Length: 264
Image 1 (cartoon, rainbow, N blue to C red):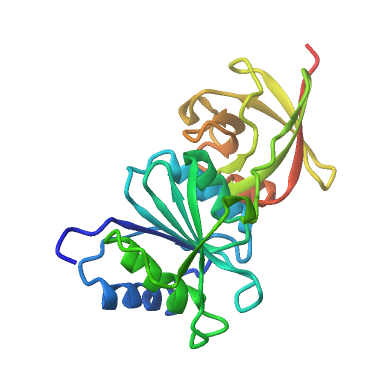
Image 2: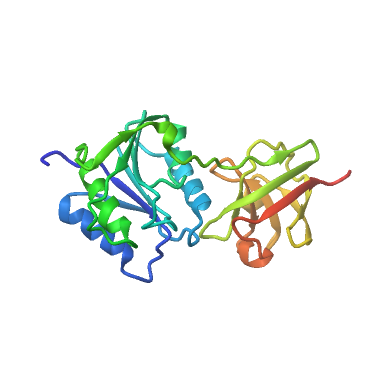
């Protein structure tokens, strides 16, 4: 292990209240003391695999090659679900549970090989992040293929797709996939074309209706105005100027909304 290791990007739904994140990092460092671990986020909604997959997908656009991405949102830990490693054409390794979490990001890079992580039987049934995924990530960071990997067909992987919004000329049925640190609500809408300052009706799953404007920047909005704009990820998001759209609207990740052009 003489050369510098690849960076390890670590995402989970563990939060930071407990020792879980530190335990995973400690395991990595015990095997690879020079490992550089980047915290993507540990604030994924508990058990929300789709949200975790969406965050990893957006991260993958900015990743350099030859990185290790450790993703853990794992409600099926300890069951028959497999631990996996996915190697991409970009030269990255994705490590985590075979529940779809890693699929959108890795498939966007092009999957070259996939592996099943074989268990020894000594791992905790409830903490595979520490006992299974961390050691594998540490070895992969040095380009070593761990001995407990068995190659499988990529076709065997659990597939999860980021759902597309249902778009027509006047209406868009969308889903909120993520809420960021500022309370912006990021949707799955990519390709709906709107004009600057165009007004749109936003219908929530609870039957509430809001009228919002489409703007290009947060600064163009009036104070505390609810708006929609295209964020840096390329997806439409619901925002409030210097406010928290999640708190004000009550909308949360996983919720479906309808956007409708207003009649002029």
